[in-house]
Amino acid sequence: MRIVVTGTPGVGKHTIAKALAERLRMSTIDINELALSNNAVIGKDKFSYIVDIDKLRSILKGLKDNTIVVGHLAPYVLDSNDVDLVVVLRRSPYELREIYKERRYDESKAKDNLASEILGIITYDSVKQFKDKVIEVDCTSKNVDTVVDEILRIVNKKQEGMLGHIDWLALVVKNNDLREFFDY
Image 1 (cartoon, rainbow, N blue to C red):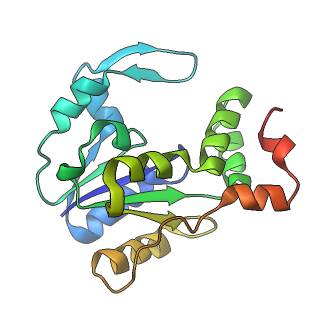
Image 2 (spheres, rainbow, N blue to C red):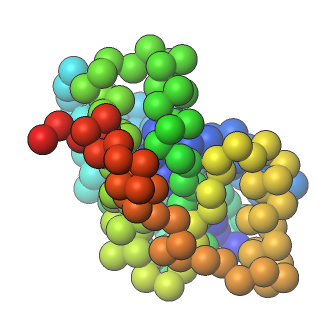
């Protein structure tokens, strides 16, 4: 099996992927580390590296079985034929905002990432790329073992994976917090 763990920065991708790999006895590939170690970084902007998507796509072509690929770039550098399951980790923007504060994210970077999470950009892009192989898992206020157990139930077909059930925009609107997360 070839599993992708993706999501907005701060949702717990690397932590969950590592724990999942240990439980399944699978190897992991970190897309960010792969980009750095294979000279696929072509620049840097104010907040992050700019990567050569085509080069990364070429490097990742034909993934081996028993591999977990982790990174927010997965929908842009992997082909649907190379994966069996895509797990998009989601986290409440209220909780994610606190994580960004702890990480000392610049306000602009935090807002961009929070907007991406609220709008479900990674989910949208993952479904566009991987179609019905995508599931969403809400990590909000859950420990690592709980999230990994939920993913394993889906992998072992004991639970149906859900897609589209996480709607942070509705929550933010209900709480009348649009101005808190979006500039308009």
